[in-house]
Length: 305
Image (tube, rainbow, N blue to C red; front, side, top):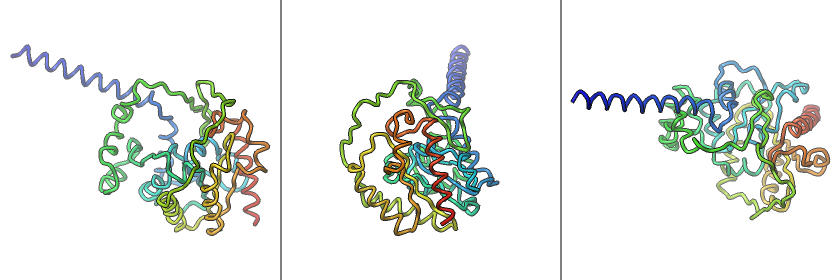
């Protein structure tokens, strides 16, 4: 009996040790960039050292450098989250940033198609690793929140279990971190010579439109200046995006929200070059410098109107 108990004890200690070591490994060497933790640390900070905010998905995370906009007199923080959309930010503004929104005077929303449609499908529960107890329990008590996702994403070993042996094809340049912005490069070569295929037109459903409108209505309750930005893409096809472009253009006019479309012909001369991209939709470090400078110029003109 003693031998049996000893063997069980050794086995349990071994399993716990493996789990502990794996958890440490997953917390340090996982496919998610470290800057997520830095973004949430800033979002949850009680002090707000900036009066401008940038939200959106990965195109904004890796495309808009806040420090490049400082000369406008507005200090921005980029809190764009990869894969996010309207539903994500409705929860984010309600539970995480609600107490700080009053400090924001300018809000740039990156309104590319994937963000407006929510096709990235990131859920707020996926970031529970970074939440404090108050936010966790507030979300736990919401019927719309998946408790399984909320709990499993608290601990690295369960959060990254499906990607434990995966190879990350992206390199995040931590030394180039800029108040939420971070440069990204691909490990493997991306063939820009291949034709970009649009398998279907990008048409927004009524539900997707309503979700986006709900987010803008929520933000509009605060006394701030809203600005829409459409980041550039390589081999952009206006015809494929026709339905989406009509919606976002009409909506911005109805709400009197400035819209900076960087796929517009007057910007493509400097932006739509292969050396500015790491794939068809994400800018590299050089491209982000050009885009940020272009946004700065548009902000200058907008402030003087």
